[in-house]
Length: 285
Ligand code: SAH
Image (cartoon, rainbow, N blue to C red; front, side, top):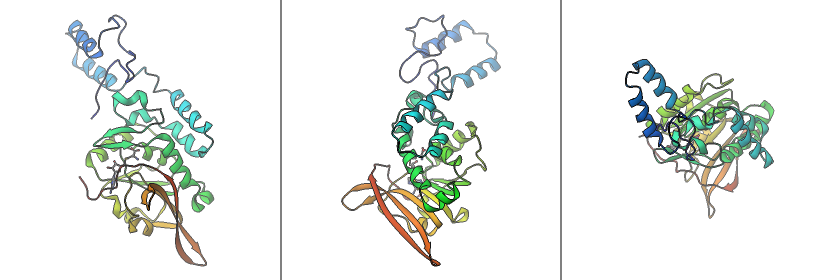
């Protein structure tokens, strides 16, 4: 649920409180005082104000500059795909997190998105999407093609993928987050996002055969082993990236490639760096 914190960013700096209120006045108190000062205010004005105050404005988050700075910091690390960075520069991450956390949205940090889940760090999103781009099929195609995402969460990563893919199907097992992601993705007008992502409320273990096969599969939750349906729905030349348990190493990023040689398919698995994702769970809630 969105908490409205009119006039105050999460870092505590006073951003939109009208000048006539003393700086020490808490935003909630400022809102109450304004009600008292304007008791005769029309309903439509109140409705307009509520809509305006529901999201922090004047925080500098709405312009692209703060996203550009985040991307510039990632670019300086020299290990991320430019196409992924360009897509991340186009998606307003603060629109996907709780209002109270919006000021932290452009730091390289994971943030809670409710229901005990977290939005991944921007550098992790960039790294995983870069791994998908480095796959054989994506290198030839220059696009992530048809994508399956497991773990829609708040919809942020889905918004980034939508700019890099031909088609996106994304699955979330928690109905509350599935609904939230739908709202977030509708509110944020994405450039070049066609067609709109297909949001599924379901258990991602089964993948989504009806939308497959997929050129790229990405999971945002980690399990003990790769669900067989994912490999089965990976198109020839396709690549899957997912956090999974690895013997003696905790959780690592696993890459699975569907390689076709001489008419025969094989699946090549490689293990990458250690990561820490929320668990891949079964069933829907
Ligand atoms: N990509 C997301 C991050 C979501 S965190 C974002 O940008 O916000 C991982 C998500 O995976 C959680 O929302 C969790 O509920 C979901 N999840 C865990 N197990 C799942 C499963 N079996 N099927 C679908 N979603 C699952």
